[in-house]
Image 1 (cartoon, rainbow, N blue to C red):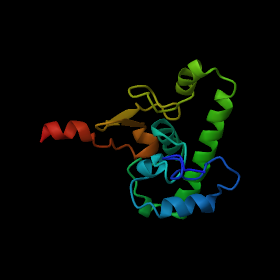
Image 2 (cartoon, one colour):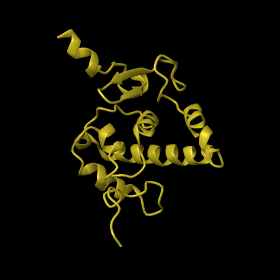
Image 3 (tube, rainbow, N blue to C red):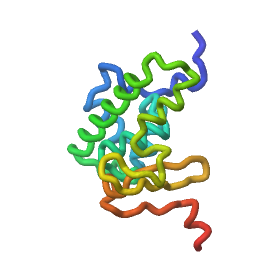
Image 4 (tube, rainbow, N blue to C red):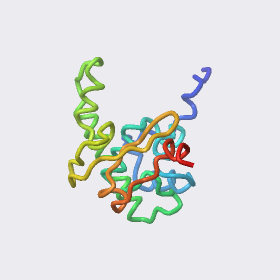
Length: 160
């Protein structure tokens, strides 16, 4: 059968029974980039987009800019657990939801994604945003970056 373009390059389904911690460790260990980008890369792991990568990193209490090369065994375990629980919760929450309501249902369950300026549900700090040319990410500085705001790439080019 002819290959459908794009489908052949999809990584494994992160909710499959075969997607265990060791599988995940092998994928992120070989990625060599920032963890946010690795989680979003559909050729590495299928189905995690911008929103859920923000959520997974918040649950794991990890900076989106942390390098995959710098992940230790505890980081990998924390990330893997966060990935599985976040995605399973999302599937349960949206089960049986009409397609037209999926977006609002997805948003209602988000802890940080799309909530810049709001209070973190875990610690109460203000959720911050970093903008890029084609997307943005949201995170909690207290939970994820030791209280330090991340540089906003889009803004900084105007300040130079």
